[in-house]
Image 1 (cartoon, rainbow, N blue to C red):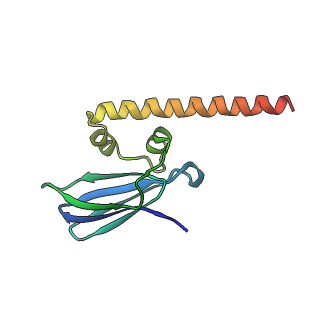
Image 2 (image 1 turned 135 degrees about the vertical axis):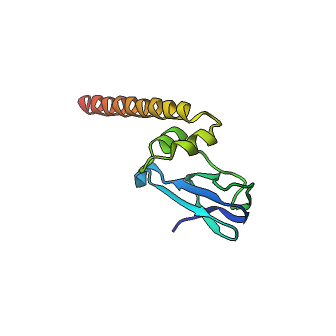
Length: 130
């Protein structure tokens, strides 16, 4: 059973919305383009975004299921999603030039690889001392 964290209703405009699942489910990216009257549900515990893709201002109403949003590792989730998060979405979300977002994406992927190598080395080392 999935718990709802947020429900979003588009009142005006067009929004590109989505969320990225956790590491345990393969960091999958789910997206949808919403127009006036559309509703989108964000599951609890996943990084999510809303991005105005229309030519006019967008208005949406959100309802949250809790006052405590919890904690999620954003770097692994945002930059390690499958398929990758659109660089224009990252640029807008971080208020950056798309070229800077591309560099951030590459740097994050390098950090994720280094983290995975260190974790694998640490786990392998622990097995040697058993």
